[in-house]
Each structure stands twice: as C-alpha cells, then as structure tokens.
Length: 46
Image (tube, rainbow, N blue to C red; front, side, top):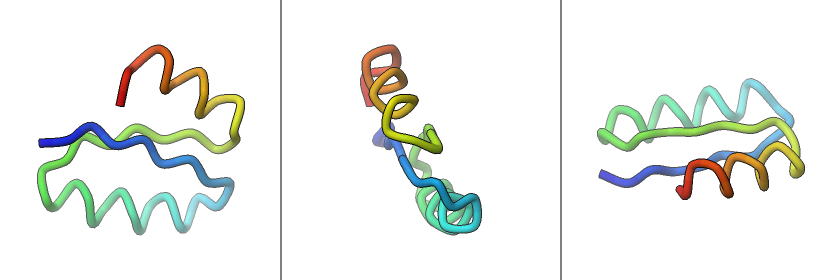
C-alpha cells in the first residue's frame, strides 16, 4: 500500500489518522512540525 506522512502538532489527531490508515494497510510516518515533516519527506520519500 501507500507510505503516508502525517504532519500535525496534535498527538491525538495523529493517532486517530494513523490508526485509520494502518487498518487499511498503509505505512504511516509522522512528524509533529513542518521542519521535521520536510526532513522526513526528503529522507523517506512518502
């Protein structure tokens, strides 16, 4: 399935979205701010 990067500063929202996506067999990457999100996107190629 897809590799999806979630960038959000709310751990609750990240958990909700991650849970839904993982149930559908997607690989989920997370970051809690824009700078970390950009770094992960460059490193992991979501």
